[in-house]
Amino acid sequence: MVKNQIEQLMREPEQELEFWREEDQQKELVRMRYVPQGEGGYFQVTYLDEEEGIIGSQVLDEVEDAERFLQKNQPAI
Image (cartoon, rainbow, N blue to C red; front, top):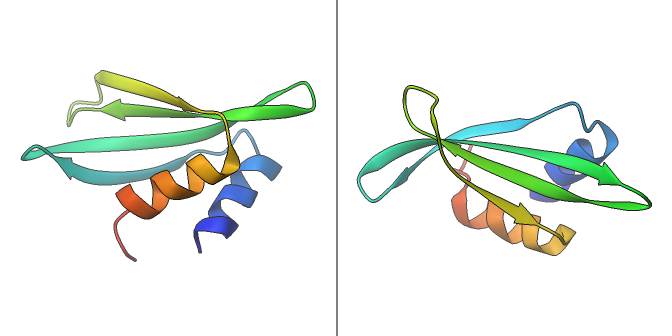
């Protein structure tokens, strides 16, 4: 499942993966997208509060890092 989501983001960089998570008793909206760059690219993760104000961001350089991030943070479907 996670590998399919990562591959989809890499094939269609205009798409975003979006889900809610709870961190420190607070709900956060997580948006993840792939940013192509040269022959590679990176994953940009943005954290938003319930009013969709940005409260943080993170860059993941490797596909494996993006997979681990989703496995750890994305709620089971």
